[in-house]
Amino acid sequence: MLPKTAIEELAKIVGENDIIHDSRILEVYSTDASPFYGKACAVVRPESEAEVSKILKLANSSNFPVVVRGSGSGTAGGAVPNNSVVVDMKKMDRIEVFPEDMIVYCEAGAILYNIKKELERHDLFIPPEPGSVKIATIGGFVANNGSGKRGLKYGGIRNYIVGMNVVLPDGKIVRMPAKTHRTPGMTHQLFVGSEGTLGIITGIYLRAIPLPEKKQTFLLSFKDSDEMFNEARKILKYLPDAVEYIDEEISSLMGLSKTHTIAVEVFGKNKDLERLLQSKSCEVLEDKEEKRFWEKRETVGVEIAKPGKRIYAGEDFAVPFSEVSKFIQEIKKAGMKYEAKLFIYGHLDSMNIHPAIISDDFKQALSLANELYRIAMKFNATIGEHGIAMRWGFSVNKEIYRRLKYCLDQKNVLNPGKFGI
View 1 (spheres, rainbow, N blue to C red):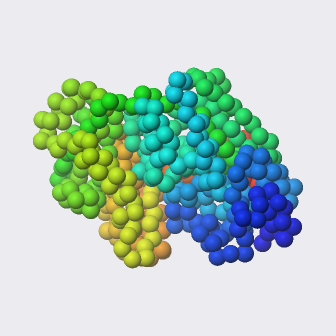
View 2: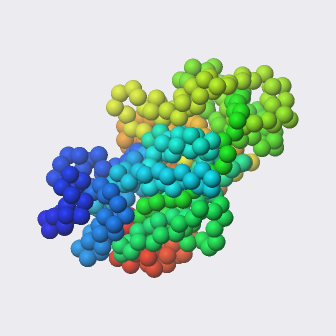
View 3: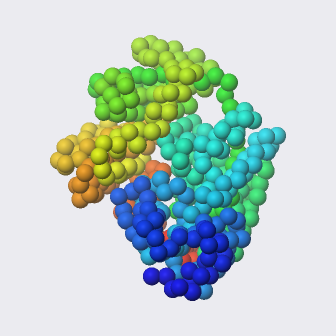
């Protein structure tokens, strides 16, 4: 329990309307999109960097832990509190575009889709884009070093960050602004992928690139997964803009034939690649058809979890290119042993595979998830973009992280218990 005096002080900082305590709403904030549960002692919704700073200063002086949260769409338990105060960042959602510099500044609570639409008004875009683009915040995306589609050609979100504003665990505000596409040093990069453990990201400066004038998506269907991955490797040689995979079950759910499907996104002209794709009897999507397909793809997680009251566990593994076909075959076999359904999709250009577990039984879902972790380690896979958080087995270089954590957060105020340390 949080002392009454701490609740009163938090209310003074954010206002009575922006603090939640002694309410069943806290149960919503005690979990995220993962199967993990914790306990939120209170929720505060700051509207400024100054308020975030005061919250962390109070946390240090009153000795209570803090967990930062965006939309709660993470699937690794990164926003799950452990008797902590949850800092909900969604009120800090300002977006400012500097079109002549091709730079956008976003507060951490800005939704990725809103950033995308604002940039499109200036014929700009940022290539990394997760399936959760319509609900995920930029702060959460950066904190997990997300990528989504277009990873091979364009890299992840880390490659687009040129500056950042952060509140350190002791409440000190650090501003690292930038309007250039190249910036010296690595200070702001320290917080990319730190999962809310080293500081609270309040604002991000991102470089954007020109929006392509032409865009097409080519759909290819395969009955055999080995054949599909062999063809995918040939396609990757021509550096497509994105290559997405959906398994037979998801293909059927999306109204396609019940086969392994890969969607190849091509910007502008890539004649050699287009020639190769058209030789494979593919379906070509443009304009409204293409937009409809990607909208369906973005909501796959919601669709497969719809029937009844179900457990959804969206896993995330970056698999060696040479092992991906065997990896998928093995996790499919594992899925058959449990009272759970396993749907598989992912980003083939970076071999970032997302097995989604759907079950009515929490224990079954968690047991299957644990088996997937063991299989992933056997194939030398790592976590791709959803963060490590409570999946401690994938945490490496713990000694370096411990030293960083101690330097910045000696009282272990921010997101304690994550990374397994």
